[in-house]
Length: 396
Image 1 (cartoon, rainbow, N blue to C red):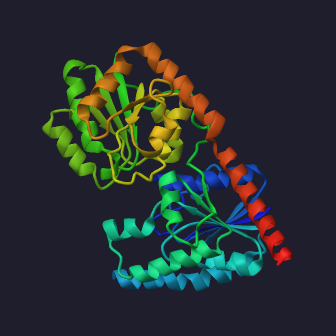
Image 2 (image 1 turned 60 degrees about the horizontal axis):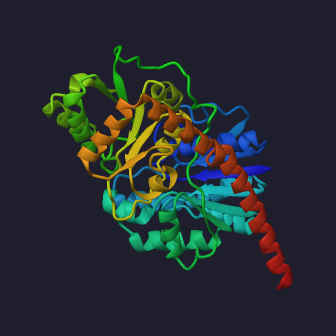
């Protein structure tokens, strides 16, 4: 099978360390393990874009023209559709076009329709709302038109969470073709028993966080909770893996609380470093805030679970669907430092509980949330949607 994987979002660097970048890499790895031949069409390349991919993957850089003004950047991204369509024609034929939805890209699904092949769109967030709220959007009307065109052209839409699925169902063009496929993990890369990459001082209890340091990860709640816990458990340490726009504020908060000596911030690390850093933790934390629509599918949760770590997490969104309190993790109220500190202390004081929760967490992902299982489902959806379409055309 030949797959054209399209990622025309300049905010998703292929080969980067962000969760979105890891998602692209892991899906491609799993596709190649299923003997698929993959052509990757991407707007932005960074680092080693195909780290860990055994079979050949052909990489095609389709970069929009550079621009400084917001409206000019949006127009450049729209103009790149012509180049993408031409690249797909030159390097085809393909059996499937699989595209990570981005604000301005529609050529992938148009090509799939014109070629009579399966077109699948993976949707990770309500991007129009995100862009308008966080970065600004000059031409929202055009972005909505692109979304409607893409959703109408796709044979199937793959949402990473029920929250994203509900957003998609608001579009008449998407209804009845939405499938929920949460994020996943490669359990061979993340497994118990690896050597710690950051050996903590002897006798320490290490609380770990992995992720981009941004407001929706609840870093202020984490700092406040660690402050409460560290007061009566001075052997605790906080290991924070990641970087982002919230780092300066986090460091200032930790400094104000006189906690920096008990905290280690690694900065951005490559995906190959993460398993060893997880092995350095005694408990992993996901202190997500209580947002009105928590539509995220946190990649770190799956990695924590595969590593066999006990997890303490906010009782919100998809996290609540993955973590069953007291069975494969501990849930606590969001935005409540005292509740988070208490839950962390519960695991600290009961190592047997932590070990049991970690084993159950890994069993959960092995059963339901591996990248291989996700890609198997993607391929089944591709085959089924095309077959259904052919039957409908034959009846017509």
